Length: 144
Image (cartoon, rainbow, N blue to C red):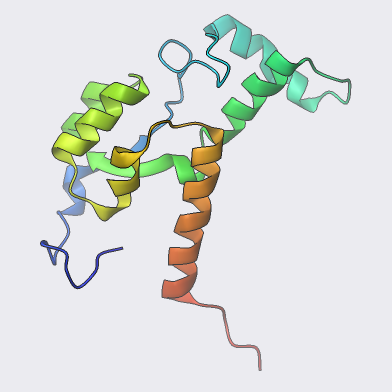
């Protein structure tokens, strides 16, 4: 994702970096749903088996399940300096955004430092953007 104008032609040593879930795996305390409501750990765990049900779900359960499905997606994953990642763990959007702005110089994280929210739509959009970068780099196989 670096361009000709990037200041740092060589990225950090990979052993200094850690994989970070921008929307944390344990998001309940600091990451309200898009309607602003909080979700408890127990409420999220109770919703989890309902993902396999064909029965209709209420809007809240649907939102919880959508949130859970977006946590492990590529659009939600990034690289962060190990100490910064461990210090942030499950903190909210504002705290994580500030830390990425203050400490990350990776182009991979630039959009996160400029955004106003991090939700399912942002995760989906970033995943699509990353896919386009990957497709440009690796291309499709040639069929003979």
